[in-house]
Image (cartoon, rainbow, N blue to C red; front, top):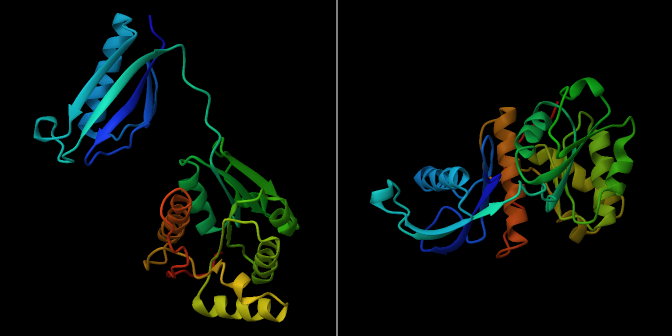
Amino acid sequence: MLCVVEIEVWAAQGSTPREAGARMWVGAQEVRGTIGGGNLEYTALKVAREMLLSGEPRRERRIALGDSLGQCCGGAVTLRFSAREGFPPAATPAFELVLFGAGHVGKEVARILERLPWRLTWVDARPEMFPPAVAANVRVVIEEEPAWMADEAPAGAYFLVMTHSHALDLELVARVLRRGDFAWLGLIGSQTKAAKFKARLRARGFAEEQLARLVSPIGLFKGGKHPAEVAVSALAQVLQHAASTTAAPADSNVSGNLGDAS
């Protein structure tokens, strides 16, 4: 009996929920990944489970995403079904975010990011602020003097600064700006906080080109001030920037509506 069936979007024409190369894996008791959900994925799951029972090693099927499938995408996909000995090893996340602050907004950021293919380093001085357990892609760092973490993060990392201390926020932002090899830097706060921070950084000798890389306020859209809304808005901006590194360039410095973390 087969252990796992791999389903790959081998070709995609027109409007489709996932691109060519998207994969999912189906076992007897577990499913990993997605090829887009909906009736397309439901149909693919049925085929994969038939193969698990029959032992058939491979299939290929073209599926039109029209009315007959109950979907209105209008495109078509060719799916390849292949027998595998087991699930693939977990992929190394392509992006890393360093989150300073485990307050209300920080917790919501972590809840969202732990479900995405990102690596999260989550830093705060207060152990009681962290949940008792975190996902495998989350590393919790409890550090009384966390500023050094801004220096130790890998090149190309994303940074979100939202601690309980404005003085610490300023030091973290300064350290990230000074190193220069980061992908994106966001600071929670109002327009007033952002202006004061930039004035203080300017007085420290930071150039305008450096200050232009600081995104504050953060958030892709203006929304409410509930912590979860703030987290969604901020991470939407982070994800937009990450997508722009593999697609057409996008402007990451879009102001939003954020209050201070607590």
